[in-house]
Image (cartoon, rainbow over all chains, first blue to last red; front, side, top):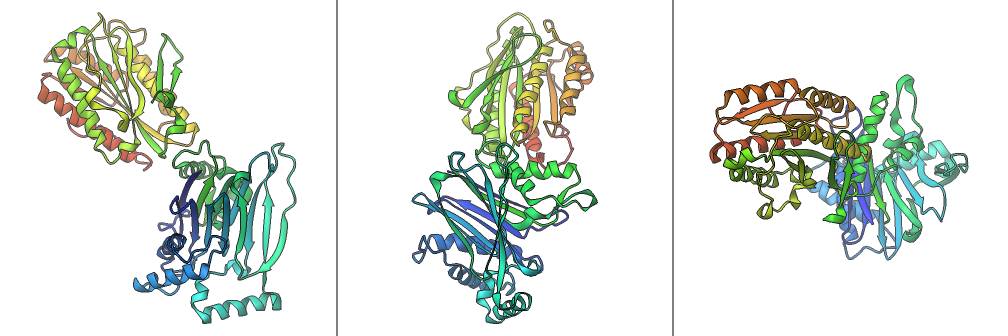
Length: 276
Length: 246
């Protein structure tokens, strides 16, 4: 299994508020976090959250079937408070995938992309799941540490959706090899505070990639919005899977888009788990 | 190591090939291609040991560099023929204790051909790297103590080659230095200095006395150039890595 991750700032931004991490201990894992740009010190917070999630994987209380986001955010909060960071520093999404005994488990707290390519004999399409929150305001794990903010979020969502308190989740597909067939997207409604989760058999998977929503922030001349699947196809077209292969692909991809005056206006972070 | 290498034939006059570590074995995102081209015609016999020591000192110094993992070294030696001592390989895989010495032999000096094929090999491998999303730049050091008397190529063709390579943009930068071990021969010095200018090289260095001290100094200068070039890789800076004083 090959693992890699990288993160890059948006055009004109000096500090990247996205973060990503990968490793093989205690078992293969990849993690991505996207800090809320309107909250303070989230660049540090996103990093603390990712490392807290990794720490949680190594802890005695970790159960493979159930990734407990609340444990992670509580641990991250103690670190954040010790460091004297803002209460908002941990306003960040968390996406994590890990592989234990041939099963890859994926969890997404907030928005972002979970991108999966099955092995060719299993299925011809790459699919990508993402969630759409009202006002582009994802439900952060950090709300679990503040009853006031948790209630405020719920009230504001209630104002938009009534008692349903739901958001939409979309699964979109790539074209198959012929370039002609592409399944219709599947759109469903889900409860806002339940994270996305799925389990995959590693034998059936070519790769799992986690990405921040910066994928959907590419704009070119005349305000042309580059479709997210175009970016997904681009980032996933790595030439080999040796060493820092996603870092290489990301650098080249951003350089190529730049030539057409197309830039990412939000930070991007990627992490990948590729089967060999 | 053998199953990690690939061999590629270069198009053009002569039957030149270069070898290099297979791209799918390279873990980093960017590489500086370092090419040493060393004269081994009979006239170098007086300072062959110092030349060998100089090469080993350069390798040792690069192996201590924080950029070691981003350096790939190819080394060729030439008389009337060109011999590949090692293809583009990671510095970490070079064993300085068993590194082949400069063994003077042959009867002529194919300086232009050796220089041109070095540039060609750098360009060909850089294209492979580029096509696989790697960033690369290159520094080439040509060391000779004599005038060309065998090549099928010329200073003008080297200049054209360099221009073509720079236009192709597979490399962020390519710099080439000619080191003339002239031992006080002003005619040779003028010849090599003109060659460096005519061929569009970045630097000419005159070693007027090929003693251990001077060649150690050369090793230091080359190591610093390599380090500077590698550090600038990916930064988008255009400053020359060969501008520091010898």
